Image (cartoon, rainbow, N blue to C red):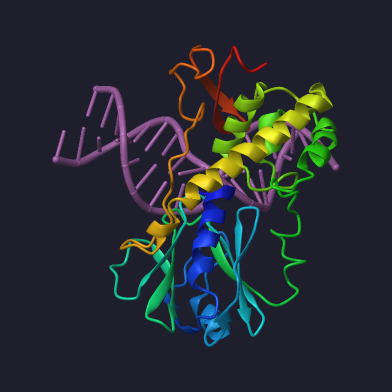
Length: 273
DNA sequence: CCAGTATCCTGCAGGC
DNA sequence: TGCCTGCAGGATACTG
């Protein structure tokens, strides 16, 4: 489910309420996830600590504590984080619950279990196998400068390159398609067959679409504290993703789709070359 | 090193 | 109403 804008929206919502709160108890059931979920271990490590300001790196959420240590979370395809009253009804597939000292509860829900929550000791961030390999943050002001040479050295389709978290983080199947449409580039075009100028344009498009999605998500932040306590999976106006068979917003040509980089990819055959 | 594929898991929509 | 198939916003182990 979540790409960078969704994770950033969750982070901002958590930033309203978590800092300063103490973990009163941890509960759940240990199960297999992308990393095994060990509730006993998390309970022993997190209980009694206070939350600091939450951080994000790519699609990863980093919940820092005092005394130092952090919960590293990834939402995979179907993960959700809820911040609700401890008494509120439990969703199915709620794997982990952290009771706060104010009667609220932080919950990790993930039906497909492609996500995970893990504990990192101070400093382990540097060596963590998932975090250590991550590429550039797309909202970095220098993106349009750093990305073109990186992509230009590869012959894989740009769609694949955008999804490669070792090159650029936070972009998933939706925003990869949207960024390519905005810059008028065909998703199958090879990195090394794209001019540096067009790659710079792609970088700016990616930056724009992510920033706009975050802005949209921001409007749902007040709902976060509402009855369901979920960060809304806001409806960004999508131009190509999921719109195969419909007319292109720019030229009315029928949007088509194919599997590129192992994932369904939609594009406009007229606008994108 | 690079590119491409298979795989983990559940839920849901659509076809019959 | 079932039952089956395919697909889903991700990351990574493996192959060639």
